[in-house]
Image (tube, rainbow, N blue to C red):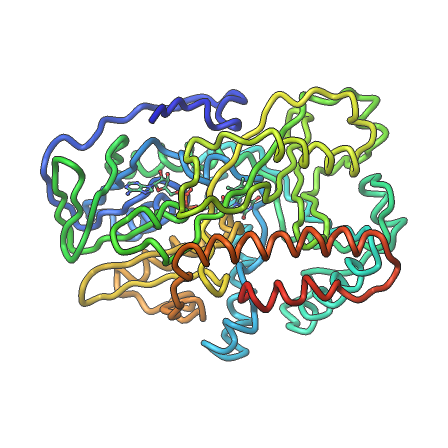
Length: 460
Ligand SMILES: Cc1cc2nc3c(=O)[nH]c(=O)nc-3n(C[C@H](O)[C@H](O)[C@H](O)COP(=O)(O)OP(=O)(O)OC[C@H]3O[C@@H](n4cnc5c(N)ncnc54)[C@H](O)[C@@H]3O)c2cc1C
């Protein structure tokens, strides 16, 4: 497999200090071994090393730091809880869900605060997030979801509906019929975060081995092709790649998400679009798109493209089909007609993990010393920080407010075997796309029946 660091568009955008690290070439013993050098693995290492400086910690990475979704995502540092609040409520009760929502909101500031302290420049701007609806059905869903979030009463912040003129003060998008806004989100450069974090943990004494895929692990050990690491605690932080580990094939579905990015836009185009505060942006379609204004004046826009490849056979390098690029271009031009003639030099894809019930989790068994965190369903930029903090507390046997959150130790069933898994995902996303087309062509506010079936079938 070619592992050019240029598979990461964000990386190619000019980041200093991309190090190359040695592979594991000896057998060795540590206190904690973490598999995966994305945000989850590195935040876990960071908090462990900070709370217990004497711990010997190693991170094993199959390719290089940030090779996974952490180096390629849309850069929304958002307070959203991955998955359904009502499912977390079933596991932990209502007050625990409220604590989870509050903890996620606080996590946005935690990431901004720690990165500032560590002098990691991640191009952050905390201007919040805008959701827009461009059909009556999208507007009805948006209002209903904002009402649910407001009912949680987690403080004066959180989501609120904004009028169409208020939204257009922020950003000019044609055909907006409703909008909502939350201040609890920051735009960041995702690759700068993962690369900066890796340097930070190394300064704290954590050893990172690149080009060192873990082939199997169990109580007290992790094996690469030629070497064995021993450790009391072993944390799996492999997100979308988890399906490639032994006995994990059906645990989390590896879902693709794809992005394109424009060249830097001219001042005239920016005047037409507005968007002076660079809030993150998404629509409220079933197959939604997410957008950021980058620090160098590009638009980066993403969506699900081809969501799932048969039998977990995703392209780890993130090559992106012409069809996916064309559909993202269409979305770009629909949102921002002024970009019709703008060049789109970058397209890439990454893989994220979707548990069967679409809810993320954290787990650590103090008897075996085995733990994991992830399944963020595409919302892991902030959540991975909370997960990393939680892993650190669990490994150190600290009982804290976050070790009681309702995403800990949740049981989740496996995905169906093939071909049912592939057929199911094709059917679900086919239904969502069809429902989006139906909804955009009519004025009724009811969600297309197809989408409601797809929601039930997908287990969301
Ligand atoms: C295109 C895209 C856009 C996204 N946009 C957003 C967004 O805007 N906001 C948001 O909140 N979330 C977003 N996400 C999701 C977010 O990026 C992820 O949830 C988050 O990065 C997960 O971090 P992680 O460390 O758990 O996983 P990853 O970053 O995937 O890291 C896992 C690491 O483990 C390594 N690995 C795998 N197997 C092994 C092995 N056997 N041995 C050793 N190493 C191994 C991989 O190489 C990888 O580096 C997006 C995802 C994608 C793909």
